Image (cartoon, rainbow, N blue to C red; front, side, top):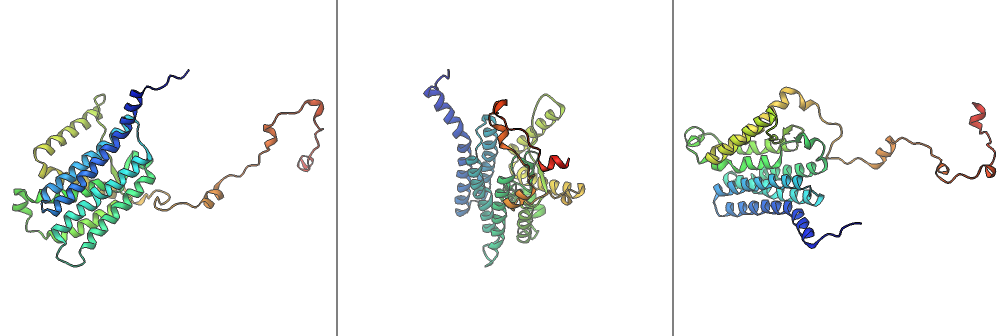
Length: 297
């Protein structure tokens, strides 16, 4: 006999299901706050708000997997929010920094946003396959947070002393186009290392994550921009040297296969549905009449 659920249990279950979406909406809040901060001229806090959005974006997936409450709705909501927090908001930061004077330079920001939404749409249709082992193309949050943390990095003494004389307007334009290409490319980028205490690899990953957390808290203006550049460069160089750029997966995930093509590849089998029905008594059965195929045999 099935025990009916108590109202308290149902309320708790509904709360757990809503929890990942709450983190996703928090991601949206900070993405919108970053846009507002750009409008107010506070580009430093705009960058940090996008970082806060990235933290919540990481937590919503972790919570969904831990509580086993992942859903198609949550995946679609996450992609829509990421398009704002890591597509439009960072491109708006760069537009205010470098592209407000020229008439058509805003096209660079448009290219970045376009690549971000295409990357997110592709991730939705292929997650659960390559996505478990690596990201297929540069993740949109990584690309967006790279742009967002440039301005806080530019306010450091190191930047003023060694990097301030570089043509950053041209570098920013080329860099945004490069990030756009990497987002829609086939370059695999590794996921976050899994932490653990039961193996040497798990301990090493845990130590690495803790070191990154300490650096992020102690020197955030130096850490984030440098870490994202290193992540982007490492994935690209690793692909070039290992030859993974030549091993493009079969089938373009951006194209939907036609049903006719699937039907042509299907194996056609003849099946006698009479075999599934009740068998007649032996006295009522008709004598077996050999068919032409059996006669030829």
